[in-house]
Amino acid sequence: MPLVTLTILKFAPGDRYRAFANMGRWLMKPFDEVGLRFQKMMGTGKNFGFIPDFSQYVFLGVWQDEASANAFFTSERWQPFLPKDTHGISTLYLQPFKSHGLWDGVNPFTPDKALPPPDPAAPVAVLTRANIRPGALLDFYRNIPQARQRIADQGDNLLLAMGVGEKPLVQQCTISVWKNAALVDQFAYRQSGHREIVKKTRDSKWYSEELFARFSVLRMEGEISLRFKV
Figure 1 (tube, rainbow, N blue to C red):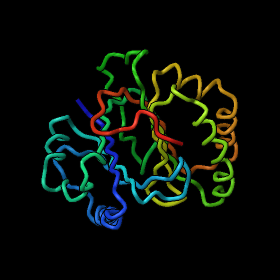
Figure 2: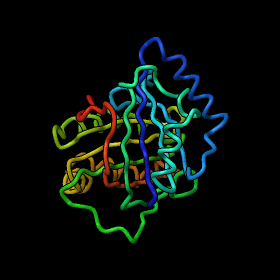
Figure 3: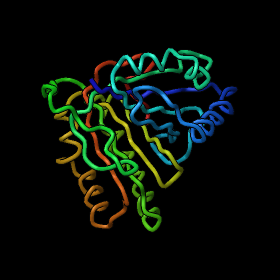
């Protein structure tokens, strides 16, 4: 069964130079692993914004099966990328059930149609990713404070929220975990503020490429905070 993993790597102040160097190392030579179908090493933004947080990075992997993921995460190839403090490592294990759009020209999260529908009462992870057109950068970032406030207003409905990205400013991604699918729908389609921002992105054609995906949360490992402070 295909599997998506999202690993959050939190580094202590004295370890941040090595973390930044690891990002460059991965860019020059991504992992070449059996069963690894798609991968991204990404930086994060402070307070769900665009100012880089050099203490925190995210590795996203799409795997042929869980055995492939487990073999990699216990391998010597992965160990140099980890914080010295193991409490800074957290991983979400996810199963996509809805995905549309493209990431680097492909949809890496195509759901397995043979799987049963997700439990409507179970937590749901949401990933959005976009290439922002250069001419739309100013408008996009003017709307960041409003979007950040909408996220903060969700309270306990939202278990985790992060702003991440591949390239500063122009390739952005958000990751969130919600208590259930109904809360995601309410935020995405019925809550004022967010609807208007989504409409604006369509009307103004902010993005040259975008992707939206939802996942069942199979499990969480490590020290993931159940409420990411925004």
